[in-house]
Amino acid sequence: MKILRFVFIALALLASAFIYFRFYYTKSFSPSSTASFSKNGLDVAVDYCQPSKKGRLIFGTEQQKALVPYGKWWRTGANEATVIKFNKNVIIGDKPLKAGTYTLFTIPTANDWTIIINNEVGQWGLSYDPAKDVLKTQVPSFLKNDVQEMFLIDFTERPDGANLIMHWDSTEVVVPITVQP
Image 1 (cartoon, rainbow, N blue to C red):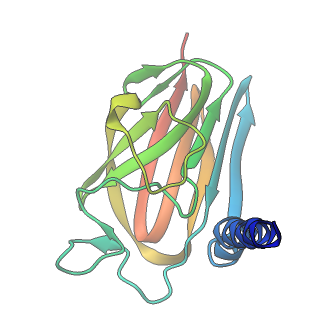
Image 2 (tube, rainbow, N blue to C red):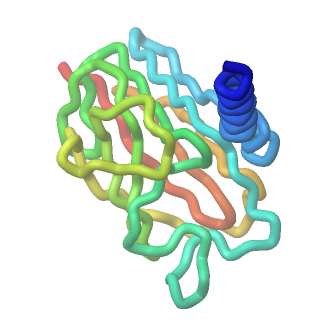
Image 3 (cartoon, rainbow, N blue to C red):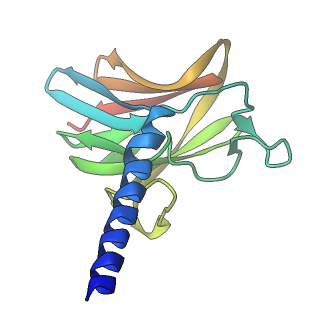
């Protein structure tokens, strides 16, 4: 009986250490952040983690050993998959989307990004099920003169909604979000 109790306690401690490492220790390198927009009745919130450049090549080819290789899906941040919430039905790019909570994935390339809205919420950012995609659209990417050390998501206002802006390294992407009439 003592051995069984010892094994149980050891497993519980090991599980606790794993949970600590996964959810708390890794966040010290890529802290959690929330970007939000609230105007004219539209509320959008993005919960994500902010990785840092740290001298690395961020976007590029696999041969260049880029952190986020062109043509591969990305969790759009670090740690857990990025979550995006809408209080109203919207149009992203040119595609309609119902109000709700979703996961945001992207596929960066040198000239544009595929924006993916996925129904599966709450997963760690290392898995992606394309069968649960509810929206895919492409937006252009731009090279900026300034270098953004930490991945940043922000919003700007538009007359009919908002622009979701993603900026990391010298790459910026603007995703138009329009309120459905």
